Length: 64
Image 1: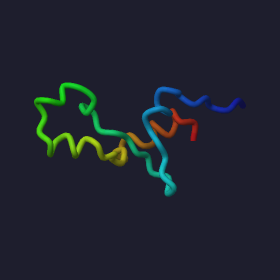
Image 2 (image 1 turned 45 degrees about the vertical axis):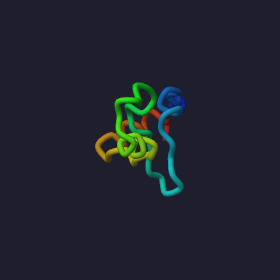
Image 3 (image 1 turned 180 degrees about the vertical axis):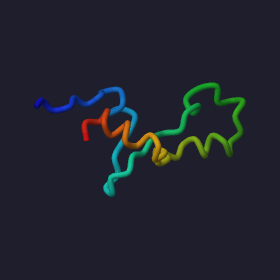
């Protein structure tokens, strides 16, 4: 049986931590930043762990 191919779009957006958790960037942090507060923009810089309900689906796309 052939191996699963990695979904390249997902590979560019999701990274796997040393413990195996999936990390992603928050949305809405790339443009139209003048109307957003400094506090909101600061929170957008930080990466977050992917929700457990999406983890198994994303692992399939990553070929893991």
